[in-house]
Image 1 (cartoon, rainbow, N blue to C red):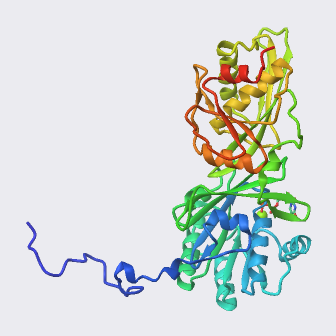
Image 2 (cartoon, rainbow, N blue to C red):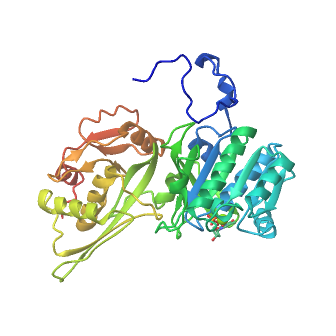
Length: 419
Ligand code: TYD
Ligand code: MG
């Protein structure tokens, strides 16, 4: 056994200066992790309450989704608070960024712009300007001399990020990094960076609609299940504080083949509309087409309707779609999908506007879903007075009649959707 000595061996590692002496945990001042709102409310919601000094935030998304547009807006607002802000573009020329800023209203005295692709030059800009926020667009387009590999490659991206994390911590400088992801994941990117940075935001959107969602997938300072909503417009990116209207068609009265539900994105309730069309078919295997919904899930619901609720669909084409390009994976939308299809098959609309909530099981039962209270509260806020909910939901909300339905068949009967 090795002899026990009072000075532990350090091996070959020499002692080094510490950043600051270890303190009793209660003595660590909380303001060191205090955050400052960016002024973009939807982003602050996702971040927790704003940017923390020294924090490095990665905004990851596919090319063209709007990362540069969003961060230029954030930079302009930060600068609008009288804080020196440095926007470094490694992808576009300064003139291009200037042009965009003019169009989106991001010109500000305190917003400084540099077009650089070399990390050393970026660090010099930070030294010279001593900014209170750095935006780097994008991390893949910056290179470090002395490190092997191509720009955007694993070695380069890691080196660039590590250097920026060091600078951020030393200067207590908040840093926003743009990172590209591609569908096939060929670019060394955000996946690799996730453990190096403090916050990872994923920026999602559908090319054919203006809607954009920002979601925290990692957050050392706040919740990791909040979602921020934005809309891409001609004049730049706009916050959508009340996104429910985006996913529904503005109609006061129900029409056959439509049903409304409240889905949850993170912990945010969103009104969603499902539309269905049922048409006769002579084909051996009639077409089933879905948009914005998982095909497999819809198939199960159609089988349940056929077998458990006696809604005849085997000789019918069935089309089911979301509205506004929404992607709905929330099982709570199952009951609304079932009712939209049943309503389309019966060519009969509900008598009054209502919300349907519930997961549909294989035996046709309506199952409980998470966050029923929050969803119903959102429906009530939007003016709905009737909801079909899973058994045991126990909703007691003034002005809202929540009817518990045990099975899809019971819901179909209740709404008189039998042909
Ligand atoms: P961009 O921010 O350049 O995307 P990213 O940095 O993620 O690659 O914006 C991409 C798209 O957004 C571009 O095709 C044009 C569109 N766009 C608008 O619709 N409105 C605008 O005000 C701007 C600046 C861009
Ligand atoms: Mg860009």
